[in-house]
Amino acid sequence: MLTLEEIYELDPTQRIIDEGAGYGAAEMLKAGVPIFYRDEAYPETMEGDLFIKEYPNGAKFIVRKILTADYRLLEEKIRLINKI
Image 1: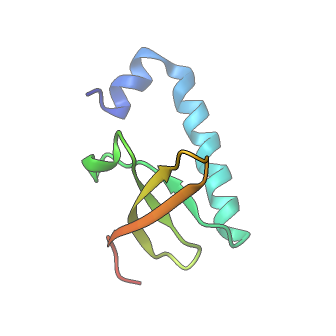
Image 2: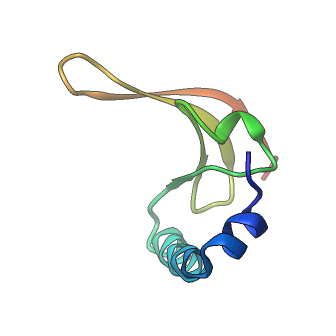
């Protein structure tokens, strides 16, 4: 698996895209909307159905997102990853 720095070296525009996504995520948190993302610090979130869910109050959980056969999106909290 490539690190972010290796990805940025291969494709410098990816850094710009990621910085823009970071800005958008910060704005969503300010507006009171939780965000989902992957983080190399939690390797289990780098692929598959596990993500980090961050709430505007700073709480972060590892969650599983599941798309059902009838196209409903379910979410299961796996574990808290920080204390607020």
